[in-house]
Amino acid sequence: MSLPLPLLLPAAALVRAGGRAPLLLSVQGRELLNVNPMGLDSGGCSMGWAGPCLLNTQIRVGPLTTAAMNTDMGGLGGRPTNPQANPFGTALHGAGPGLIRTGLEAYGGRFLDSSSEFMQSNITQYLSDPQYYFQVNSQYVRNKLKVILFPFLHRGHWTRITEPVGGRLSYKPPVQDINAPDLYIPLMAFGTYIVVAGYALGVLGRFTPEALTLQFSKGILGWFLQVILIKGLLYSLGSGEAPLLDIVAYAGYGFAGTSLAMLARIFWNYLYYFIMPWFCICTGVFLVKTMKRVLLGGPRSYERHPSRNHYFLLFLAVVQFPMLFWLGNISG
Image (cartoon, rainbow, N blue to C red):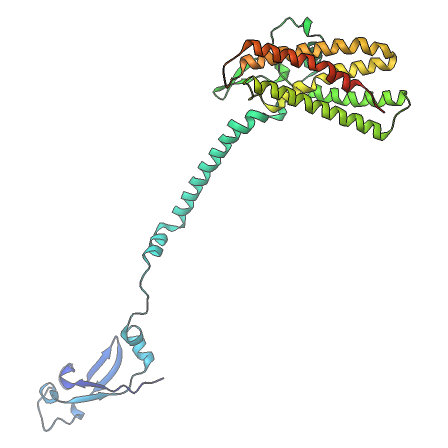
């Protein structure tokens, strides 16, 4: 599209190129006007250069197209086409994606490190590592069962053995410490308890899937009640920071004596009433010795009260009688 924009230029604006050579008017290399001085009506001037002759002469330049103006004069009507720069965008662009990525990686690394430290210092304090409780062998199982079923014959100490790991003290696994809790014996004892209960129900002629399910539910409920009892005891005595899996292991050791008493009942019914009280006493003594070690060795939230500790530990031992008798009762 062409705009009829006549451009009036005074002849004095023309620059003499030398002699009688044509005079050129151009903008940024684009020719806009080509004037030959010999062809102009100079009013009888015969001088060899065009300056004085064209002093008052006006020359009409043809119409310019908007495209030519845009190209030659740097934009629309000579105005710049680039908008004003955004200082914030320039700053972000100057920072570069590498600097931003480095900052995000550093922040993410610090966040992950703090999260892992929180996990190790808080969650593992209560749950510990499950693999730790299954590091056992046959010798450990035999010696541990002797301690559980005959605690009076245990001549060694009841304190757990520690070792430095990563700059702090850590307990040795059960395979290296007879006093360490494990989950292998409680789980095997609970499985034996269910098998013996099913066999006893079959001998008595009362075996049904519902009866075995009821016995299984009773065992789970008894185990849970033991955990609540031990946890509440430790919490009331100001030592509630024992790992949960430790308490689960201590509460499950009672199934070992209960399973043997139920097995003896299959061969002679009255033998059960002689063996079960003995195992109740042994389980109570084992828990009292173990809990005393936990109370004396672990951190406490308030002052110790020896008399109150003795009462609570005695209560824990006495509760084993109704608890184990209830678990050993086969219902069909």
